[in-house]
Length: 226
Picture 1: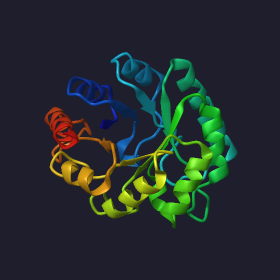
Picture 2: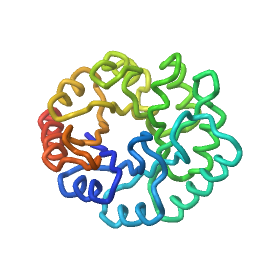
Picture 3: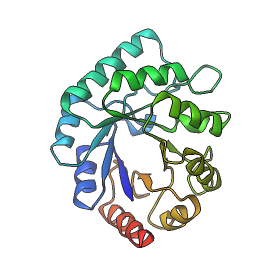
């Protein structure tokens, strides 16, 4: 099983590494839900040794992008590839709320050979099954989802259906409210093998991962894996 920690700072990256996480989704600007990190932050995070998947999102808000924003995204993707990142996280939406399938294909093409994770724009689609097939067709490696619900626990039934539908063609990664206290139940309810958490405690004002929470997530996944 794989634990991906969503990190908004180098401090959180270090906590993820030191407490047994397997991969880092690297972002900045948590109040906007995560935007593209700086070149310096990506470089520093990669030096810690875990696979780093930077967020490619030029601004907060919705997910249709204009030509100028796409130009910035292509430059950021190129920079990630030149830095040696194994993958990126991104997503695109049409004005009607569905995935922008053609743009997802372009993102995958621009990223090659890096793997592409579709972020939680997926949870805004009108039909999860149709959207999943579109992501498979686009060449995405994985999708982050709460099962179109407020959190992964509430969306566990849909996530289970998506895992079965994917049948290994794309990884379906539950995220949203995944914590050490519920991850065992989410594993059992969904059959997923990759999980996403910021591991931020309720008391954190700096959006920094809690070392005890990361460790507890890792231990809970080990027990469930047995």
